[in-house]
Amino acid sequence: MAPMSDADFITKVDEGGHNEMGLSKIVLTKNPSPTVKAYANKMIADHTKAGAELTPIAKAHGVKLKGMMDAEHQTMREAMLKMSGPDLEKKYMDQMVTDHDKTVALFESEIANGKEADVKGFATKTLPTIQQHDNMAKANDKMKM
Image (cartoon, rainbow, N blue to C red; front, side, top):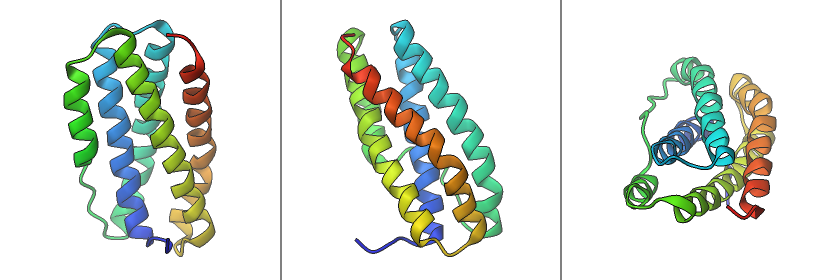
């Protein structure tokens, strides 16, 4: 797979943040277990912060952010609205593992192949947080919820 442009990276990161916040917000409406609740709150806080850091970078490069979930995650969100309890929590945590595995790879690619210093800098600064989210999701996913 060819490396993506810095602009595509910015767009994907914005979408990914909204995907994770959107699904996290659904879980929080369903009275989740304390572990899943803490994880979902962390996703919202960390992705809000990353989004605030990404916005001026996007603007500097003329990238218009959609500020919303992609179609795949919107469909998932609709399905999750109908779920509850352990089934919902498992679906959410499985999806967080999938999404964060992809996001770690996306950020590593940008760090290796990005052209713009500020975009690469954002990727370098943010990657450890994403790796932490991924590791937490994998740890949570192994727990019997």
